Amino acid sequence: MDIIGIDLGTTNSVATVYTNEGLKHISFDGDFLLPSIVNVSNDGVIVGIKAKNMAMIAQENTAISIKRLMGSDQKVTLNGKEFTPQEVSSLIIKKIKNTAEQEMGEKYNRCVVTVPAYFNENQRAATTQAVELAGLKVLRVINEPTAAAISYGANKDEDMLYGVYDLGGGTFDISIIENSKGLIEVVATSGDNYLGGDDFDKKLSQLIWQKSGFDIPLTQKLQIKLNQIAEKAKIDLSTQEEVIIDEKFFAKKDKEPLHLEVEIGREEFEELIREDIDRTVELLLSTLEDANYDIDDLEAIILTGGSSRIPFVTHTILEKTGKLPILIEDPDKSVSIGAILQGAIIEGIDTDSILVDITPYSLGISTLNESMGFELILSKIILKNTPVPVSKVSRYYAMRDYQEGFEIDIYQGENEKDLSENINIGNMLLEIKNPIKEGAIDVTFTLNQDGMLSVVGKEIHTDEIIKGEFRTKISKSSQHSNVNEMDILNEHDRAIMGKIDKLLESDILEEDKADLKALKAKYINAHSEEKATIEEEIIDTIFFLEDSH
Ligand SMILES: Nc1ncnc2c1ncn2[C@@H]1O[C@H](COP(=O)(O)OP(=O)(O)OP(=O)(O)O)[C@@H](O)[C@H]1O
Ligand SMILES: [Mg+2]
Image (cartoon, rainbow, N blue to C red):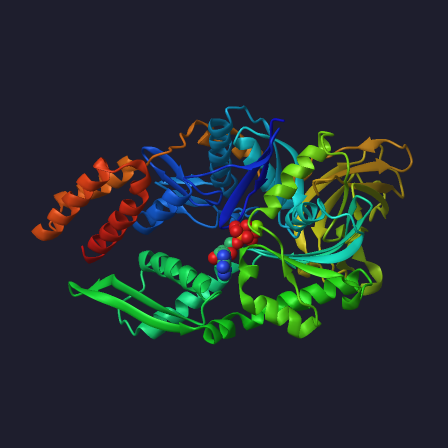
């Protein structure tokens, strides 16, 4: 099977393939988690843990949490060149494809890729584009909590109703799932595209900075280091009541090293994230309500995503719902496993289960409402929580006689009265071939299994189908991107050596130069498995020296 299951995460990506011996997770520099971080230099592109290291000393060339920008028209500049979010993501996918092919000795041409359930049309389109730019075909796009449910449900025979609570690095998703006789049915879903571990890191880093008492400017560079320190402290606080942050050479002031020494108690951290976690539980309850269920109907609440390891998540859910949630086995791998299992189902290898997914939001077009003083309102065509694929038709009447076309604005969201509360996902011109006095058209919205929309119109009086180009916010132009030609490097020795050499030529202290030279020699002579540790040491040293420079 030439399919890869890809969980393209905000912080980490995971890839799984199907082999005769079972499922296999692709390994990146010794770990199945690939940090979703991309560094671009003149030598080429580095993705993963090495790019994460580079972020400390070359932040201007490094993209972190790019998934948060997917579907927007924001660009990032790396090494002096502009990239769209989908181009950066495509480099991550290319790394996955290359590594899988090297490790498995096979060609991979297709993939099942996952997206947060609450990802909108533009974000889905951007993800599909990223996959294609990386040279893979999209076999299916599935929702992350649904994928987690597939992996959870794969070895369960009993019928049950449960919630999947997925709190990751950048996004929160909640889905209510019904398993019955091999049918995995999503009955309701909701979430927040901008809530996750990244936000907790940011809040914690602010607290650490406040407690440090340093009176130096917090540069972007220090912020990156501080974020990494905060993330580590946060993870430690999941198993410890308190952490002591102790960074001997955090920064420099007047050539003197500044020692970062801060203590954080678990409760302090919980206070920082209380509001966010409360909101996730409120979303869980409102999603249940949408599906006309009560919390007592749920047989289980399954937790997945790295941030659900925070004990406060479990406490809050228990406190507010009276239900003790359970952490899914392998919370980091479940989404990727679900993706490849879905690939196997589509290929007919695993024919036991069938997936019914739904749309997490309503889709419609803006119309003028006479009774509301000709205000623009949202006229919904496909309703939230409708199973996909689905096609729905709505009829619209012309405003003027002999109107030659209908310019339709397509929206996604729930607020019918206040259009601005919804997201505009694109527009389209439906041209009327034979204008008549009181014209009307039927507009058909079709949502496929990937959650992607297509729209066609029909002239009522002639039955003529009108196709228009559905212009989403995602431009097609980057399809001809030059990322295809960029090399994904496995090693980045040269990038690091370049940094060292530059420092050696600068006017740092002789003793620092001697230290650097020694480190350089140690690195060059090291076995590959030792390199990672030395690399960290080098990065720390460069970071510190550059800072004082
Ligand atoms: N033991 C832990 N305690 C607290 N947080 C953790 C722990 N382990 C991982 N995390 C956090 O989980 C997040 C990563 O989770 P995950 O890998 O599920 O996210 P992702 O898939 O990259 O993001 P998303 O699904 O939102 O796109 C990071 O913010 C990380 O710091
Ligand atoms: Mg995830």
